Image (cartoon, rainbow, N blue to C red; front, side, top):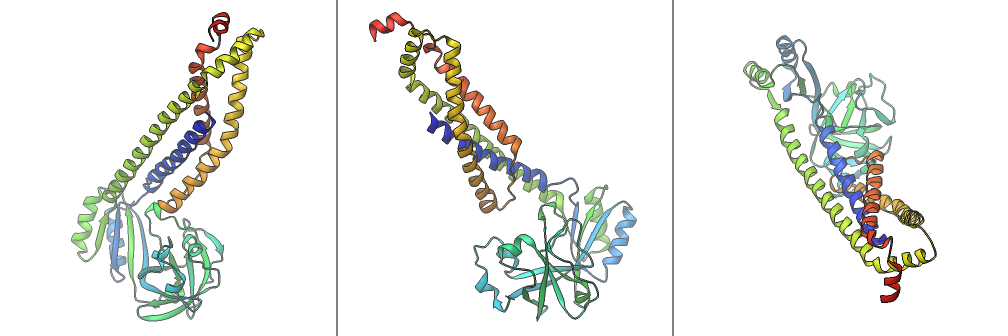
Length: 361
């Protein structure tokens, strides 16, 4: 019974943790503040006109524009990046091929600095770099490391000054690499932007395309709908597997209890001959179950936490979070259900007939 309950509880917790993190990913990745339109490849000469036009159409529109340029990684501390980062590294995408970089005067509120310090403005001769903290840790970067970037065909050496916590799930404008604005102002660049509006996004898109035919825009709601459908199907599949595990685990537990019926009947017969009443037997069974289940909680929870973390962080490459309320609910509900099944499976031997058993068995 201990082995059956332990395996069932561990699998149930593991699948529940994975499913719960997927559910959170669905709700967090599609926030209510997600933009309606995403503008790409906006020429810097028309960015101001585009912004004025949209604000004229919808004065309450939420607009965000960021400059960007193309760059590629060459080396880290004079070592070619290909020799440092393997293809299996989860952040290899940051240093493979061309990468869009941006710049700003101050860090964005939703990109807080977790290590290092922001640079002082006004230095045009040196390039300072702010990295996505997760990517930087994966790639083995440290504050004050030297990075060589190829920007528009020219190799430029920059110094890492800080790491930022970047959450790409809010679908706002985010960059893994940001450089200082004073140095970047002299670079040829274009803009990328997002729009949140209370007007129908399709109507706004049609007016923008008609006025600015060279501007490319993407409707985010269509992409969000497809992503949401996929994640919801994954969540339903994982939930269904969890339910199957619950049913199988309970069947195995009942089977294990039934195997012990003869031994239990003999014990209860001895107890009755000795004058032990039913409440005492029930109390003893409750204490026994509490000891067994108590020893399983730490083991099952530890294994489930480690397993689900590896699945969510490494296999799915999502953010894993521990839900204490969910864990407590699973442990208590599983304990109650298992104990009730044990009582039902043993109901025929709680009050054995003494003389027929002694005479026949």
